Image 1 (cartoon, helix red, strand yellow):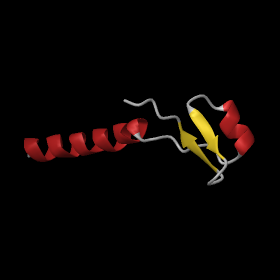
Image 2 (image 1 turned 30 degrees about the horizontal axis):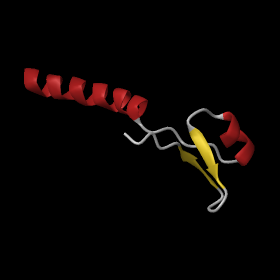
Image 3 (image 1 turned 180 degrees about the vertical axis):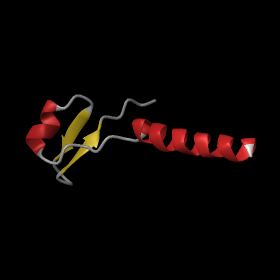
Image 4 (image 1 turned 180 degrees about the horizontal axis):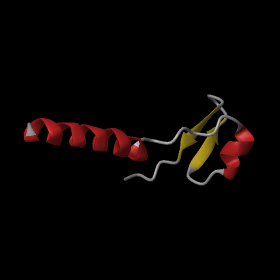
Length: 55
């Protein structure tokens, strides 16, 4: 019974914490992309992409 409760608590905790570490959705427009730090507008594809830090 204790292990079932522990698994339920662990599952609930992971379900709440996991979205905090998810990648944020990039801005949809060029203007928003240019304002957002860490993103660059790719004119060839017409999409906002994360800056590559070479790491």
